[in-house]
Structures are given as C-alpha cells and as structure tokens.
Length: 193
Image 1: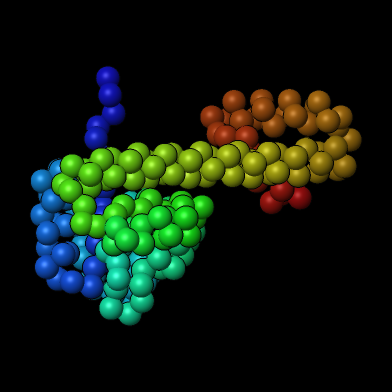
Image 2: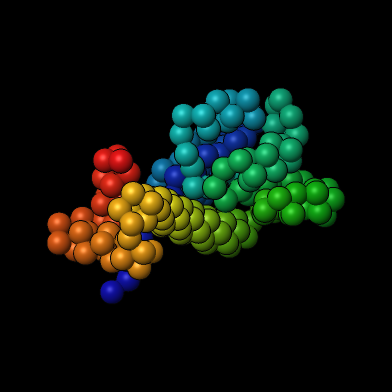
C-alpha cells in the first residue's frame, strides 16, 4: 500500500506582485496548497529563520538583489529544493553558475507545462533530501547508542573485571530483561559509576 502523499510547503520569492500571483495560481492548479509569498531576498531570509519550506521558488530579478546568490545560499543552508527562474537570454550563464549548488533553473517566460515538469523534479529532489536527512538522524542516533554502550562496557571491564564479551552480554541481557534499549541500560551504568 503506497504511503500517503505528502503536502509540500512552498515559498515564492518574487519582486513583482503580479508574477507572484500568477505563480501561486499555477501552483494551486498543480495541487500544491501550502504557498507563501515574499517580495525580496531579505524578507525571504527573515521568513526562513522561523519557518521551513520544502520548495523555494526564486523569480529573478528581485528588488534587493538578482536572486542567483540567494538561491545558491539557501540551497546550501536548507534542505529545500530550489527553483530559480531567469530571463531566457541569461539562462545558460546563470544555470552554469548555480547548478553545482543544487539549484534547478528554468527560463522565463515559462510555459505552464514546463513549470509543472520543473516542480515535479524539484518535489522529487525535496523528497529525496528529506529521506536522506531522516537516514542521517537515524545513523547519528545509532552512533550515539554505540558510543554509550562502549563507555558502559569500558566501565564494566575496568570496575567489575568483566571481559568485553561479558560486558556486552550483561548490557544486552539487562536491556532484554527490563525491556529497555541498550542505550538506556548503558546510560544507567555510566550514571551509577
């Protein structure tokens, strides 16, 4: 059974209110529902301090900067998929500048079908980044558990004259008997000593 479809949050950064409205209307027609708009990079940076977005669309040029540096910065500093819209005449130059940062670029004016395709690619990228982030957190938790268990085993070896295998079995057995994780048992051993 497939997982429930995720609702993506989108931040549209556009210096032109009319363009922001048109983009928002197209995104709504594609099925995206959580859309916020801001008018410049400074406002977007402030918004990003208090909210996370899955996708950020930068419609350049912005009123306070062109937008390519901002797009590159947020691609590095957030897990959001970033879509940069630029005039067709400078598309190749800007694309070469930002593509290594993970920013997807589309030329303007953009046809609705082309925007739809770009959004599907950015959505897939955003989902992949989120899944990778979850895996990293899981691995960090596992590494922390290993560190705790090793510290507890060292204490058991040093203070209770156990071998490494005996210490390991002691922690595993206590965890099974008390229906706790090995990390919880290890923490208790460390705090006791």
